[in-house]
Length: 75
Image (cartoon, rainbow, N blue to C red; front, side, top):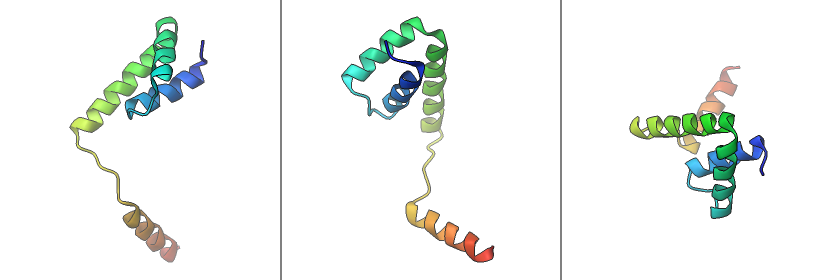
């Protein structure tokens, strides 16, 4: 059985459709036995769903670089 730390990593990967079939299977088994990780997985799914509904988008990398440069110039 996988550790809770590994389960959390796989859970996060699964939210972004990056988990392999084997990882998903291991996670399902772990979640069956570990109620703490099961709650984490549920809350993680809810958060992802809310972010999708809110149509949140990350700031483009060029804008991040520009902001960092402006902050460093003011310091």
